[in-house]
Length: 172
Image 1 (tube, helix red, strand yellow):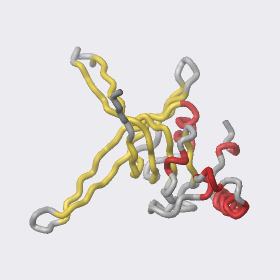
Image 2 (cartoon, one colour):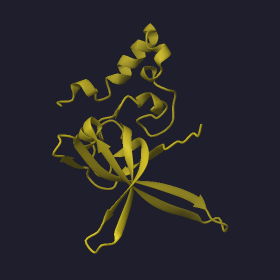
Image 3 (spheres, rainbow, N blue to C red):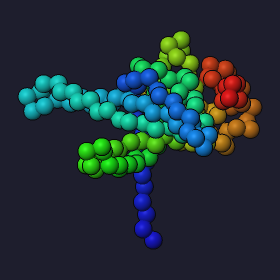
């Protein structure tokens, strides 16, 4: 049996405000871009930097949340899969666009800049270890299923969750 994997994880900043659309069938789709930076030292020891720009597409509930809560400059963790679309341009040439279809998003801005919180199609557990400060820290109690029923973990989870936007509190 052949195995395949199409998974993308990025931490970066939005390059433009999200553009949210309602499709005729009722589904919501939101498009936005994020930039990631890579730095390295060249052979002469000089610091080099390269910026990559990524097109992100978020559907349905996650799309609504991205459209509502993200803005240009927001720092986010995004998880999804690569997808390439093709179409015919007005001049008859074939055009291609590679984008990331989002499954999960976590806002990484410090408290006060943007509301912190994680949203996704049940994939939040896979993002354990990403903190709102953008660094890596211990997995949160609510991200560890075996700890959920323990009293100390529950207490820790509720104090940490108070800082986050809860999906249940969203007006849609």
